[in-house]
Length: 172
Image (cartoon, rainbow, N blue to C red; front, side):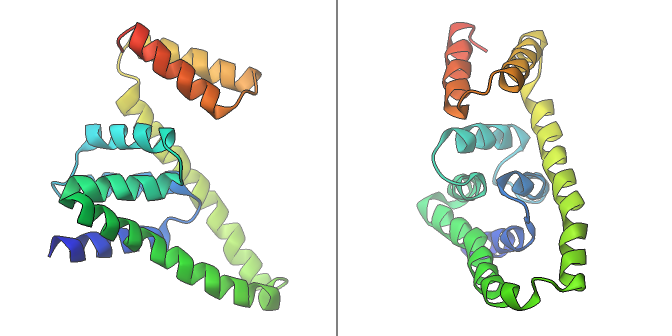
């Protein structure tokens, strides 16, 4: 039964998480309130691990959440549940986009969705910040990394490695 629930819940997330992996975060906060699979602290760890591993954030998080809920089988089912709506939508959109590319209604729908996607990403970022910035050391680290990322355009890998080293050295 848990596999069916996992598939259903992640299918819904995959269907409505328009805008990328970070948009899955608000949905996962909702799941954490409804099911005992993971809590908010686990969610912060999921985000950190998902951001640090290869692959799309949403897929990594679905895999991690599914594994926490029901082991390897849960990881597979949750991942498939998340990905299948995207595959179906991409196939449909690729067939229809050429035909409706200049349609005012399609353009209006896409224009309406963009601000909502930005709001979902901002919400996810603020929720993660609440979990990650817990004292003056993590606040200082956040500020320093934000400044460095903003002013010095280095690879994200560079910042992930440096932050991991800082975390180890200062035992954050």
